[in-house]
Length: 286
Image (cartoon, rainbow, N blue to C red; front, top):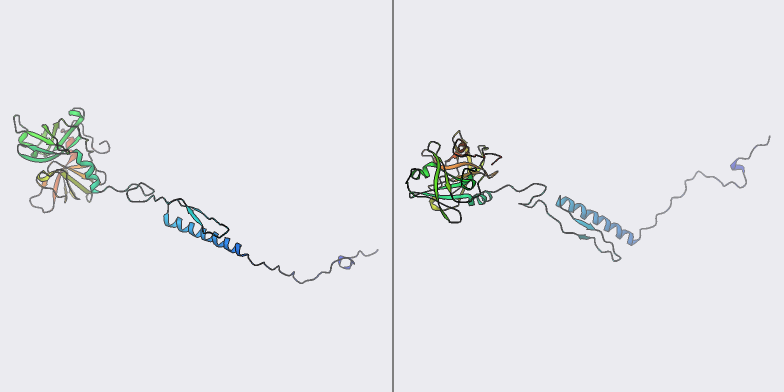
């Protein structure tokens, strides 16, 4: 038997070697290649900074590589979504004292009875009230005008117009009264939810200065009254005490304490629902 030749023994076989093949040498990068890589890196860095700095802001970037090596061009102006007062990812801005007062003032009136002056405000009085609205004040403000043939009772609206009014109902024990007048005012929403520590806003006409605004913190409450340091004075009685958080009326400003300094009280507005108002939309329905 003839031995078959191995590849190494064949005349045409290529010689083998255990040495590693020489490594290929990398050609040096061309200047234009290095410039393109620098531009791409710059564009990426700019995009990252823009995204981190603006958050939800939209920024469009275009890396424009030209023959002369121009820098990347940013296209599209940034749009801020979290500016104060704007509605964005963080939601609407919280109301301020000025916001609540501005919304309430058109519904607040000055009440004059037999030479005395106080304040009042419009509420939803149901269909039984004229134009479906009614005016609320303190009973002591209109005490002299409750009897027949009593002194003249008038109310003055925020635009300076004076109107005749009548007492539709009064409760001296709770110091609340409901008036009827031929006016069409937006009713203020009534609230029955509050906490000690809530910021409250008082609007009234002390000394005849209509639309006067003060604010403070609700410090105490019981089954009849709310106490706060929202300062009021003569002429403020009967005006609304509003909760800053939702702009709802929680009390009817009544006066100050004889034995306490820097403390004023208001009658709880939900006491109107015990017979004085035919319809008493307090809370979410208000």
